[in-house]
Length: 200
Image 1 (tube, rainbow, N blue to C red):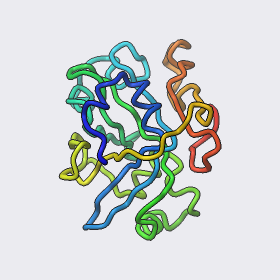
Image 2: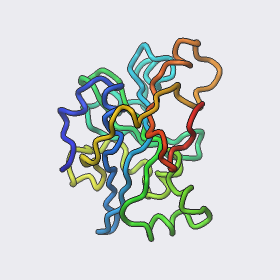
Image 3: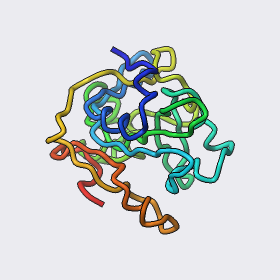
Image 4: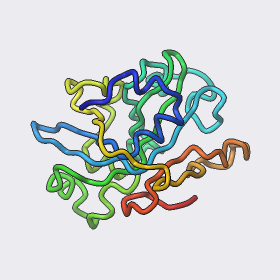
Protein backbone atom coordinates (compact mmCIF):
# COMPACT_ATOMS: atom_id res chain seq x y z
CA UNK A 1 0.00 0.00 0.00
CA UNK A 2 1.38 3.40 -1.00
CA UNK A 3 1.92 5.82 1.88
CA UNK A 4 -0.53 8.69 1.48
CA UNK A 5 -0.09 12.43 2.04
CA UNK A 6 -1.54 12.47 5.56
CA UNK A 7 1.47 10.46 6.79
CA UNK A 8 3.84 13.16 5.56
CA UNK A 9 1.95 15.90 7.40
CA UNK A 10 3.65 14.74 10.61
CA UNK A 11 6.71 16.63 11.80
CA UNK A 12 9.91 15.78 9.94
CA UNK A 13 11.43 13.85 12.83
CA UNK A 14 8.42 11.54 13.07
CA UNK A 15 8.38 11.00 9.31
CA UNK A 16 12.10 10.18 9.29
CA UNK A 17 11.78 7.66 12.10
CA UNK A 18 8.61 6.05 10.75
CA UNK A 19 9.94 5.66 7.21
CA UNK A 20 12.43 3.08 8.47
CA UNK A 21 11.22 -0.28 7.22
CA UNK A 22 9.10 1.25 4.44
CA UNK A 23 9.79 0.38 0.79
CA UNK A 24 11.07 2.93 -1.72
CA UNK A 25 9.85 2.00 -5.21
CA UNK A 26 11.07 3.19 -8.61
CA UNK A 27 9.23 2.10 -11.77
CA UNK A 28 11.67 2.17 -14.67
CA UNK A 29 10.74 1.03 -18.17
CA UNK A 30 7.95 -1.09 -16.75
CA UNK A 31 10.22 -2.76 -14.20
CA UNK A 32 10.05 -2.42 -10.44
CA UNK A 33 13.18 -1.47 -8.53
CA UNK A 34 12.82 -1.21 -4.77
CA UNK A 35 14.53 -1.26 -1.42
CA UNK A 36 13.70 -1.13 2.27
CA UNK A 37 14.54 2.25 3.79
CA UNK A 38 17.16 1.70 6.49
CA UNK A 39 18.53 5.21 7.14
CA UNK A 40 17.00 8.70 7.10
CA UNK A 41 17.69 12.28 8.16
CA UNK A 42 15.19 15.00 9.05
CA UNK A 43 15.48 18.64 7.98
CA UNK A 44 13.01 20.54 10.07
CA UNK A 45 12.42 23.96 8.52
CA UNK A 46 13.49 27.58 8.51
CA UNK A 47 15.16 27.41 11.92
CA UNK A 48 17.29 24.37 10.99
CA UNK A 49 20.73 25.66 10.06
CA UNK A 50 21.52 22.47 8.12
CA UNK A 51 18.42 22.78 5.95
CA UNK A 52 18.45 24.22 2.44
CA UNK A 53 15.49 26.32 3.57
CA UNK A 54 17.41 28.04 6.37
CA UNK A 55 18.14 31.16 4.30
CA UNK A 56 14.71 31.29 2.71
CA UNK A 57 13.04 30.24 -0.51
CA UNK A 58 15.22 29.75 -3.59
CA UNK A 59 14.78 28.13 -6.99
CA UNK A 60 16.71 25.10 -5.73
CA UNK A 61 14.74 24.51 -2.54
CA UNK A 62 11.34 25.27 -4.06
CA UNK A 63 10.12 21.65 -3.60
CA UNK A 64 10.56 21.96 0.17
CA UNK A 65 7.73 24.49 0.20
CA UNK A 66 5.48 22.19 -1.79
CA UNK A 67 2.73 19.88 -0.56
CA UNK A 68 3.82 17.07 1.76
CA UNK A 69 4.67 13.82 -0.01
CA UNK A 70 6.53 15.33 -2.98
CA UNK A 71 10.07 14.56 -4.03
CA UNK A 72 12.96 16.95 -3.57
CA UNK A 73 15.84 15.74 -5.73
CA UNK A 74 18.88 17.98 -5.84
CA UNK A 75 22.40 17.69 -7.17
CA UNK A 76 24.90 17.61 -4.31
CA UNK A 77 28.18 19.43 -5.09
CA UNK A 78 27.35 18.98 -8.76
CA UNK A 79 28.01 15.24 -8.55
CA UNK A 80 25.31 13.11 -6.90
CA UNK A 81 21.53 13.41 -6.89
CA UNK A 82 20.01 13.09 -3.41
CA UNK A 83 16.39 12.12 -2.77
CA UNK A 84 14.21 13.76 -0.12
CA UNK A 85 10.48 13.61 0.51
CA UNK A 86 8.71 16.76 1.69
CA UNK A 87 6.69 16.78 4.89
CA UNK A 88 4.76 18.90 7.40
CA UNK A 89 2.32 21.66 6.44
CA UNK A 90 2.18 23.44 3.09
CA UNK A 91 4.67 26.31 2.94
CA UNK A 92 6.60 24.89 5.89
CA UNK A 93 9.88 23.80 4.27
CA UNK A 94 10.67 20.46 5.89
CA UNK A 95 11.92 17.27 4.27
CA UNK A 96 13.43 13.87 4.99
CA UNK A 97 16.58 12.71 3.22
CA UNK A 98 16.61 9.02 2.29
CA UNK A 99 20.18 8.00 3.09
CA UNK A 100 20.21 4.24 2.48
CA UNK A 101 18.05 1.33 1.38
CA UNK A 102 18.38 -2.44 1.42
CA UNK A 103 17.79 -3.75 -2.14
CA UNK A 104 14.64 -5.85 -2.64
CA UNK A 105 13.46 -5.82 -6.28
CA UNK A 106 15.23 -5.15 -9.55
CA UNK A 107 18.59 -6.46 -8.37
CA UNK A 108 19.88 -7.02 -11.90
CA UNK A 109 19.08 -3.40 -12.77
CA UNK A 110 20.86 -2.14 -9.67
CA UNK A 111 23.81 -4.39 -10.47
CA UNK A 112 24.00 -2.83 -13.94
CA UNK A 113 23.82 0.72 -12.61
CA UNK A 114 26.40 -0.04 -9.91
CA UNK A 115 28.55 -2.46 -11.88
CA UNK A 116 31.77 -1.08 -10.43
CA UNK A 117 30.72 -1.86 -6.83
CA UNK A 118 29.99 -4.97 -4.72
CA UNK A 119 26.34 -5.55 -3.78
CA UNK A 120 26.74 -4.17 -0.26
CA UNK A 121 27.79 -0.83 -1.75
CA UNK A 122 24.97 -0.44 -4.26
CA UNK A 123 22.66 1.58 -2.02
CA UNK A 124 24.49 2.28 1.27
CA UNK A 125 24.48 6.05 0.87
CA UNK A 126 22.20 8.79 -0.47
CA UNK A 127 24.15 9.32 -3.69
CA UNK A 128 24.57 5.60 -4.25
CA UNK A 129 20.89 4.74 -4.00
CA UNK A 130 19.93 7.37 -6.57
CA UNK A 131 22.41 5.89 -9.04
CA UNK A 132 21.14 2.36 -8.38
CA UNK A 133 17.53 3.45 -8.94
CA UNK A 134 18.33 5.81 -11.85
CA UNK A 135 16.95 8.88 -10.06
CA UNK A 136 17.77 12.36 -11.28
CA UNK A 137 16.35 15.86 -11.58
CA UNK A 138 13.62 14.73 -13.97
CA UNK A 139 11.86 13.30 -10.91
CA UNK A 140 12.15 16.45 -8.82
CA UNK A 141 8.85 17.71 -7.38
CA UNK A 142 6.82 14.63 -8.33
CA UNK A 143 3.95 13.42 -6.17
CA UNK A 144 5.27 10.36 -4.31
CA UNK A 145 1.81 9.35 -3.08
CA UNK A 146 0.77 7.89 -6.45
CA UNK A 147 2.17 5.39 -8.95
CA UNK A 148 1.72 7.98 -11.72
CA UNK A 149 5.05 9.52 -10.74
CA UNK A 150 7.02 6.24 -11.13
CA UNK A 151 8.46 6.98 -7.68
CA UNK A 152 6.69 6.25 -4.41
CA UNK A 153 7.00 4.74 -0.94
CA UNK A 154 5.00 1.77 0.31
CA UNK A 155 4.28 0.67 3.84
CA UNK A 156 6.65 -2.10 4.85
CA UNK A 157 8.05 -3.60 8.01
CA UNK A 158 7.38 -2.04 11.40
CA UNK A 159 10.74 -1.52 13.06
CA UNK A 160 10.66 -1.51 16.90
CA UNK A 161 12.42 1.29 18.76
CA UNK A 162 14.96 -1.10 20.28
CA UNK A 163 16.26 -1.91 16.78
CA UNK A 164 16.77 1.73 15.83
CA UNK A 165 19.69 4.07 16.53
CA UNK A 166 19.47 7.85 16.59
CA UNK A 167 22.30 10.34 16.23
CA UNK A 168 23.57 13.50 14.53
CA UNK A 169 23.29 14.01 10.80
CA UNK A 170 26.41 13.55 8.69
CA UNK A 171 28.28 15.66 6.17
CA UNK A 172 26.93 18.99 7.37
CA UNK A 173 30.05 21.10 7.04
CA UNK A 174 31.58 23.54 9.52
CA UNK A 175 29.36 26.63 9.32
CA UNK A 176 26.61 25.21 11.50
CA UNK A 177 26.17 25.86 15.20
CA UNK A 178 26.80 23.03 17.62
CA UNK A 179 23.07 22.90 18.41
CA UNK A 180 22.24 21.81 14.86
CA UNK A 181 25.46 19.95 14.16
CA UNK A 182 24.76 17.62 17.08
CA UNK A 183 20.97 17.49 16.84
CA UNK A 184 19.77 13.84 16.90
CA UNK A 185 17.96 13.98 13.57
CA UNK A 186 19.33 10.88 11.88
CA UNK A 187 17.75 7.45 12.28
CA UNK A 188 19.00 4.04 11.14
CA UNK A 189 18.28 0.35 11.65
CA UNK A 190 21.12 -0.48 14.00
CA UNK A 191 22.37 -3.79 12.61
CA UNK A 192 21.46 -3.33 8.95
CA UNK A 193 24.47 -3.82 6.72
CA UNK A 194 23.30 -1.24 4.16
CA UNK A 195 23.42 1.73 6.55
CA UNK A 196 25.91 4.28 5.23
CA UNK A 197 27.71 4.58 8.54
CA UNK A 198 26.84 3.51 12.07
CA UNK A 199 27.85 6.79 13.70
CA UNK A 200 29.13 10.22 12.72
